[in-house]
Length: 82
Image 1 (cartoon, one colour):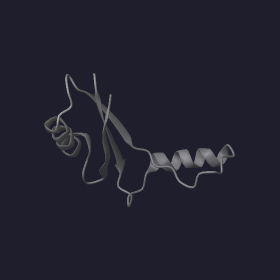
Image 2 (cartoon, one colour):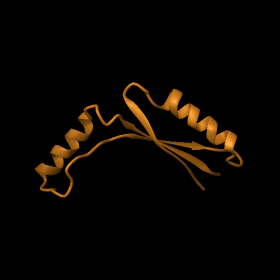
Image 3 (tube, one colour):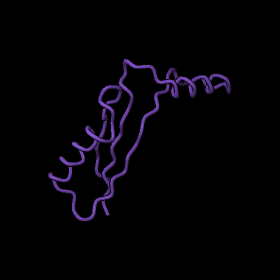
Image 4 (tube, rainbow, N blue to C red):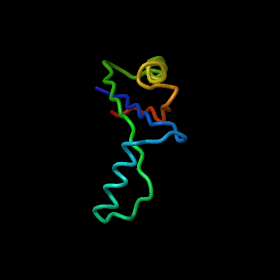
C-alpha cells in the first residue's frame, strides 16, 4: 500500500526549544559539525488503493488544516512512498 509522507517544521522565525536542546547536547558530547538543529514532525498516511491527484489534494488540505498549526508551523513536504 502506498504511503503519503507529510513533513511539518516550526516556522523559521520562531525559536525551536527542542532543537536548541539537541544542539546543546551535541556540543556537550563534542559534536561540532552542525551549527543548528530544528525538530519537526513526520506523518505517514497509508492509502487504500491508488494515489490519485484528488487523494494528494486531500492530503495537502489535511496537512494544512489538521496536521499543522499554521500560526507556528509550515508544511515543508508531501511525498508519496510506495
